[in-house]
Image (cartoon, rainbow, N blue to C red; front, side, top):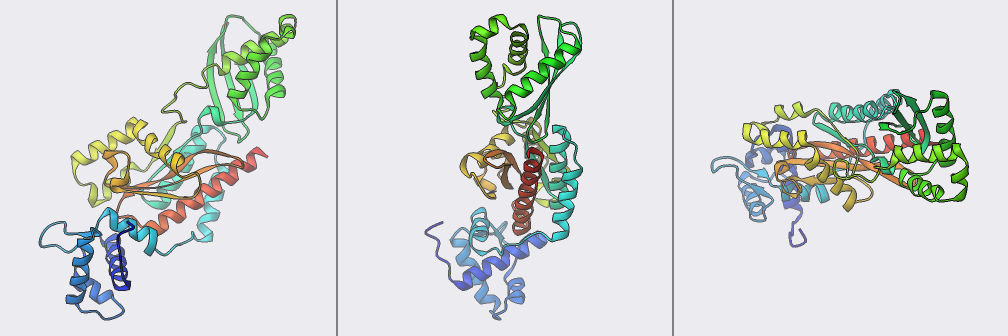
Length: 355
């Protein structure tokens, strides 16, 4: 992009073409731009400018007799340099806050509500990656007896999200003992991450006190069984990915090819490729909104899509990524404002729950 030189007229015409194309979805001709242009440039002058923009790979002809449409590079120049920034209306921000406040702390419901919000407000596809279990800090751990040697482990994170796991144990404990062991582990390891807890448990199990204190020994063994797989590679090393609004893509003319839709939906269903794309936003851009356009996507199946994503988290810790996926013919200014607001408000909600 550094070698692309545009003068004021080039920028105005490129912006006008992209704005009109986002609105109509139809190739844009010089007469359309002439009617929109404030300087009163003739269609012939605009055709010349559009031809220059095509030479610079910012516009292209979808077929010989049509007007022009933006390329991925054209959208990139628009997003980086020409687009006017926007903010969400206060009414929408208040609605987002109220929806987040009404969400249940159960991880599935909480993150599902965020993906639905993003989908509903963008009319595209909403996505969010929940935190991997290794990222969360413990607020409470509880054990529920399911059978003679089966126990349900309920881990409540500092952010109030809830994670469940069923474990098999050799010993048989009654519910009263399980309650006592859960209280001990909570008091000992509150505000620590699960990998930190695991490492400390291993240290404590080797100490002399654990050899003679029955309750301590039982608590450590139960705690170890609860978190022994925290470093397992779960869905590419992150939490779950929640998706809502895939049907919104069916309404877009860009996705009227059945073969194209099959490949794209397969990516969304299998999740690991989508996770890889979303994780790249965390790896390469630790803060702020990131926009990935068309061929910039790491996934070939998403080469006709744009992703607008941002990290969310609590003070001192990034927990995951959220965003929207739609066609490259996306209203980027609104999409960026929406993702930025939801990421900020969701982070604030998690931080309040943690305090």
